[in-house]
Length: 250
Image (cartoon, rainbow, N blue to C red):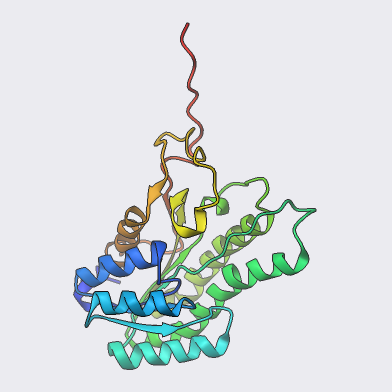
């Protein structure tokens, strides 16, 4: 499909009340897009919609609920006049080694991070078809490109999402729907507040990224990457490239 002018973009963003979702909503709304912000953080989501003004709406959405998804898509089509993009951003982080994480916690992370994205694509695909096509961006992680100790359930979920993204890209290509995965590294958001300050110290770009930096990549993927589908876009300060060896000089 061709490049999308942000002024013709009608997008539903999950996990949109703060962090990467909120930064993406702000960027796209500032460029003229119509934005449906969804989250379970009602106060923060409503406040953001008020901040952004006329182009933005807020709708409560628990991404693990099929009924919530149907309500959100209906609300988006009615409020925005259609829907031609989905930013599947909602996710949760959980710590625990493979033999320590509790089964209920493991299932909960997969329910949000994987099943939530599946339900979103399933619910939004008919609306994107009605719009003549569109784009879906699924937010994975560098944890979907490599392993991390102590994050067994999270790593599992992000690798699963990476594979599902490719299957969806093939399934939806005949409908003029592009499907892409976004892989942030350590980004300074409320979800990563518990990570040590030196998490990014050995990266080529030795700092945490900012949500706005991920939002700019998301905008490119949604609006500009017209010849890409099933592809993986990484914004990680070089984290998956390798570690910089900083030798002490005598």
